[in-house]
Amino acid sequence: MKFLLIPVLFMTFVLNAGAIGVDKDRLQDPDQEARAQHLMKQLRCLVCQNQSIVESDAELAQDLRAIVREQISAGETDAEIFKFMTTRYGDWVLLKPPFNSATVILWLGPIALLLIGGFLIFRTIRRKPEPDVTRPLTATEEKHLEKIIKGNNK
Image (cartoon, rainbow, N blue to C red; front, side, top):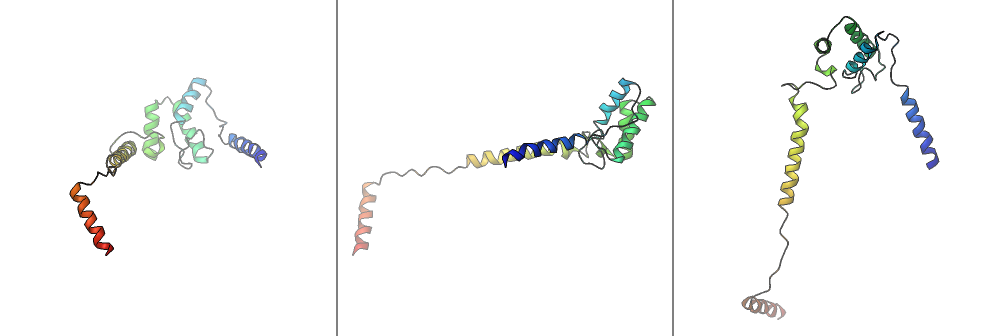
């Protein structure tokens, strides 16, 4: 059974290798195409969650890649392209959303949860019960115990 594991894994990786979309209409200037690729890696495909538009082969991703290339050809700056995309599709289109009042929970939430969890673990460890250490009985306690034991045996 183990000998089947390697071919199955190999086939899985080979099939996923063709999932990256390649556009026919690339920019003629290699510097502009490299800039376009850099920008497209920062934009989220709105159909495929958590994939950049470079990685996605969805039609919408192809359209978004075409828009980025058109805007680069028109001489738009990176900031202007991001502003255009966020105006049209919202902050969701950015793979790395900006830090503002609407996204503060996204950025600080994991840190807050980590701190709360660490505090709870620390508090639990600190409240560990003391080990039960018994001390020897005093002479009066031993006499009292003997009376109780003798009283129950009658």
